[in-house]
Image (cartoon, rainbow, N blue to C red; front, side):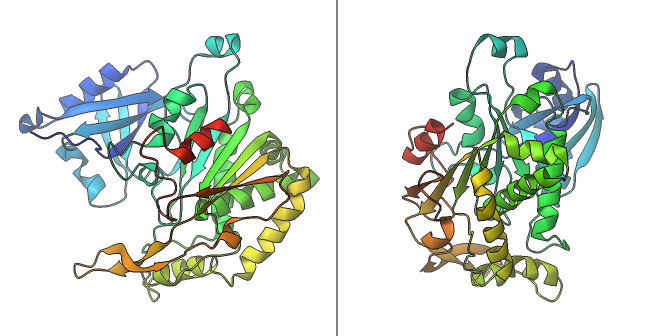
Length: 373
């Protein structure tokens, strides 16, 4: 039997607080069919990002395949629930909301040392996957925010943010809707004194950077008499890392071709709101630049040095990047063009899609990221 090196990761919620990973593996295995005894389980348990929850969360991988009771996850995007001895477990693979990627050391250990104590929040691109979009393309296909940061930044509270931006769905989201939900989730993740004291690092790829920039701007404007919890988010922000973020828009023709305009017209409007002629983006960028004098944070703008392939629909109906070479996000759009004291410009020798897919801890761009955290 060949065991794959990069099985898909599943999120499990509703785990009773006292349960160990060994207990969870035993409970999940107990639900296997008789012919599934060869399935191996690997994973880790973390606290929930929302500390009002009284149960834990786990990230779990099944090798060589997931058990049949999880089949509904692969035929749709819904959660499924299973009642076990360790809790009423809820499984999903969309990772919507905030998810912590690895456990941090106990508080007493953190107090005895002075390691980086940042809260790191990463937001992926439009139609991306909160977890999978950060995996390397080659080799072991590690998820670097989890697999590399847990070694290089073990005391940081590293989280990913998932949001429904699937192109062919009935969603009517706007950028503002994503901003509101994003800030609400961050506020729920920063309730305790320890959490509030952690500086925030935002990492955004493409459209994810747009969500971050506009959310930070909204938090800054809250200082003028808005929500104090949002204002506190702005005050805590120390680093903004934008990877290929289309501050001045991007090429959207091939993305729009994936959308059923008749059935999902609102999705087409969302894509059009980030094109090169978007007045909305232009207006929001001016507002963002206006608040930069208030920043206590450093901005790092990463831009791609390679062209990408256009999306093309194949004979079997699937889309792949096999078309003509294009530059989805031009350099002048990926850069804010702020003074050098505010913005550091970092070229990445890769294309727009792969610029956040680090294959090894020795990757040059990855080492630059870590050096600034």
